[in-house]
Length: 300
Image (cartoon, one colour):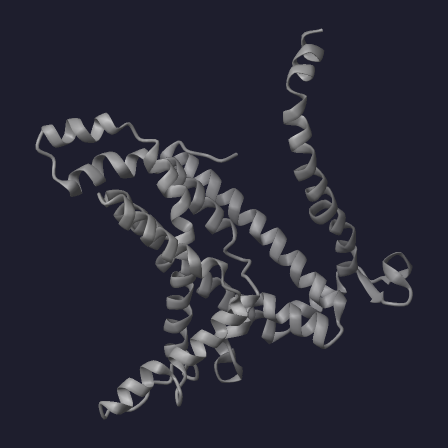
């Protein structure tokens, strides 16, 4: 009886939850039916159910392909570098914004920092070409006008890696501050006032109050990032990458695109995608277990 009364009083909450559940069922759980393509010799005319079973043959072919290991290496390396460079950026930026005293300047700065997140990667690719292009790029035009040689930001592997990381920070750092700012806002202001009365400097207040106060948020986001170590977005490496730097820019998502869509080898592409999902699950479970042992914080 108590359950029915509770449901009648809070049915609006269940109604709001219904739409996200429908979304996940249709777009997340529904496509899992297609995972079996990785174990079949998929034929478009016969469909998934009519295609012949081939067991693990697709995985054997994938693991014998040197291009797969190059893409896997690049995926792990780029994600690891992103974790080292892009993960601390929104945290540092959020603390700087939180410490600002002028409300109007803080709002203006937040607005300007959020904008890159809403720009399409196609447009960002055009901006990158205009800024970092070897012959027509803004930076190289300045360098050549000063008598220096142009820098191959987009055609040399090492320079391209710097460009890739810098563009990633610019695009995501501002948007990533939202969760940190929300957590910082929830910290009791009396702690800062008491520390200031005791003579603690601003850096001391940040170190002993701000960072411990958002430790749970930091750990949670770190676990999510580590869990996504094996997966990588398609847009960024595909748009910024090119043939000259394919040795660094070719990742698992672009490999799936070339194999699955351009070459029509859907079975191999599905096998690579399933491999990504399983290894990603291992990463996120391992990261969660480690963080729970070290900090007593867990998202599971």
